[in-house]
Length: 265
Image 1 (cartoon, rainbow, N blue to C red):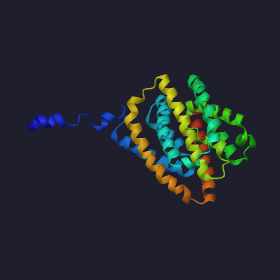
Image 2 (cartoon, rainbow, N blue to C red):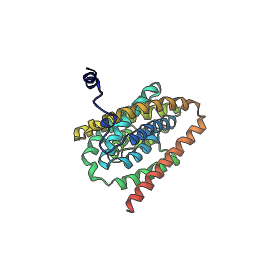
Image 3 (spheres, rainbow, N blue to C red):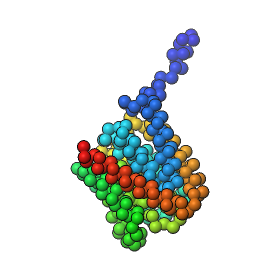
Image 4 (tube, helix red, strand yellow):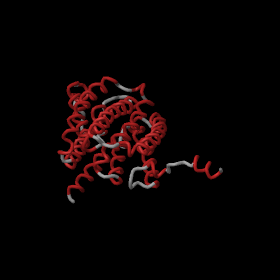
């Protein structure tokens, strides 16, 4: 009787059975910790975590898996941050950039495999460096047409390189309130990643095999977001602005380094 009871109530699935193929438990735990750290960074300085995430995922998973998986994880991370900081979202900016983003995702989904990812990474890195340290053109901050077009281009590029948070930041860095900057960036990235995930589902990517890992990484990221949101209001304004620029610069330089190293192989 006891043996029958043991068989009846034995847990039929081990933790490793919930993981994608060729991913061991230790590496999965490391990715969960990574999600916490990257969300903490992004909630404090608005960006940087997404690029770090895609860089590490590229070391673990095949190239065709990285961008869809990154989009799903960042969807959860950014939506959590947008929820926590929803009172500070600047909805007009979200509306026009996301309108272009919806169109750009469709276009990027059709032509992503035809575009040279290395060249795009170099272009993004150079663009981010220039826009971070040079005066911002007024058209970027005030023109609805520029916002729609910019949102479209960013979304299309995102289908290839994954992390385009620094490009989105270019369109909102003029916001005077840092809480508005972080919250608006989170909402924009939530919508962009929603479009991206929907497009990859339509293209046939099998998210189900990665779903348990995605869910746990999203939960870990939400904890990082909650802590980072508290740090945001404690960081002095000048330190935040300089930190924001430094993170942007480091991200851009890393994009250039990665692209150039791949081009030299």
